[in-house]
Amino acid sequence: MPLEICLFFEQEVDENNKLVNKEIRQFSEFYHKKHSPKDYPQPKVVSKMCDTLVEHGVLSLIKKSGIDDLNSSYICFNKKDIKSDLTLKRYFAKKLNYLVYGFKYIYQDFQNLVLPVEYTNRDGDIALGTCFLFDRGIVTAKHCIEGAKKIAIPGFSADFLNNSRFEIHTNELMDLVYIRTQEPLKDTICFSTKAEVLDEVMTLGYPKIPGYHNFLTAENATVSARFTSSIGQIASSAEDIWIKENLFLITAKIKGGNSGGPIITKDGSVCGIAANLAESKGNYDDLGYGTVIPVAFLNEIITKKEKTYLDVSKIVFKAFEEN
Image (cartoon, rainbow, N blue to C red):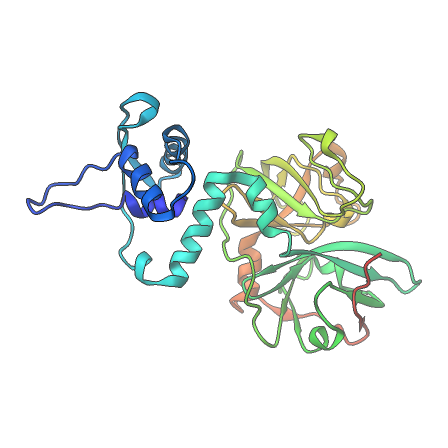
């Protein structure tokens, strides 16, 4: 529905070159005629969606009027190619859904794009990290791969990973790996953005202890699922913490297994990657903060501006086995 709202309220002029006024009442009639749902869209619900899109600069409010905002009108200054370009239309629809439906929708949409990394060390001990599918490849923390005896990622065979390139930042302390696959992945997270202090974000990942845990609603915890999320805010830029780069802290704690997972803003964009603190460089996690590498450093690797390669020749890649 958010996409339908934007397309309906798209700027339009009449034969006298005057702006056509479109109201929520007209949208409800249009939507019901097009999709034939059992009931007409509730004007108050549509109005709430519109107001959210106004807040994010997608729509502009013309007037608030009528019972349940029935006569309220809006305008959307869409680019004309959104209707004709199916790929652009699909991406635009995703972005609108993220904005309107929020973190719950993002969580559900990203579940198949955020995966565990099974790490077996030289002593045979197994630990979990997190990776996510992004920009047609795979992203994780460098320490989730480096020095392993065996590595497994669900959905990716040993041959597939053996034929991929493990790219890292030229700053050797940057805890980041981009796995550039031989054939670009089709279904990946496609949005990234720069985050600011006090932005609300969500972390996604796989903690060491199996179980779903939401920091805001702990009573919803369940032992049956490993995939977890926590919501917090960007607390501070942590310039020169230990690698002479401008990282940031978030109020959602990052547990060991969440390392390598995405930090996601309210519009479904990746703004950073959960990082590992270098030893003897301070423990921000004790204060309730997680340390995050801004996505800009990942983009430097992907665009080949600042990249080198991680030696994975001694790592055995294997199929991921569910416990």
